[in-house]
Image (cartoon, rainbow, N blue to C red; front, side, top):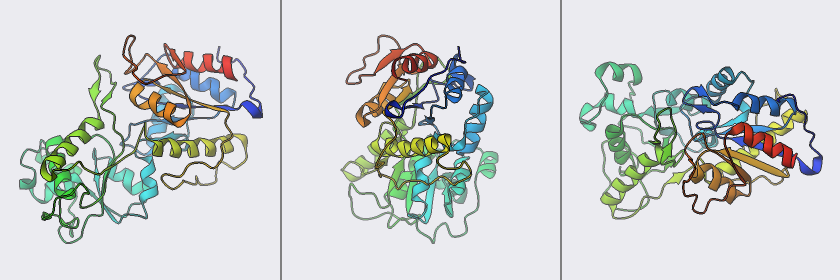
Length: 352
């Protein structure tokens, strides 16, 4: 079936954006039909990107893994992870508190941030800051670094890259940072305000996500709710934060730019060797070559509603978060299908 040819006219050019967890993979295991879906699009030179609220690895590391698991070539220029838009903040903030799994330090370095503190560095500096941390001494030595000017140089922003694993400690450290005096460690501001002492960004707000377990698990959205609740209790006002990832317009605009860039590379308009030009965060594409873009996802609250609000079409699959009978509320997917292969073939048969 994957040898079938589809021809797009310039007036009806379509493209795809795929979620990963619950659509292409379940944990590390490929979902049946995922490989054939991408191979079919590659054969027909139909542009697509991967648009995920996952993260924690570099774009190259993530696409290398996906390529090996699905036996299909996926470029690092074809993926937007939840924290990929942080690349646009490199020149805006000097010292950042990069929150997430230990791997996010390397990701932030790869993006070009010059002064990075991971939350484990603060635990290492003083264990009493986080009395309920679950990190062993061995883990702390492995994950953390000594930061000589940790107490004498201010933080400029908190960037949550992915779901951290030591929530008790991480909640305390983030709370300290956003309630500090001018971003300085070991300080507490005197005033109360909805505006944090330094900006805080969450790379996604997914309450739930699908992993190999049969029931959905809490995601970064749950962690964000706890941060916001604690901040509100301390300040008497809701936290003014920034959120990225699906379903935000910020991320869909960014992803649209990446999709347009990939279409130009695929068609030969620009060479593959030319460096990807990233848009400023919040910049909408001035023009798009696509008649329709189809978001293929498993989560109505992020994939489907995000595409719907942005003006893209959507294909809701039943291999992840969404199950038959779930209340879709205000979500109105273009189609509901069993799996990703059905999403691709039915879309191509109807729209290509």
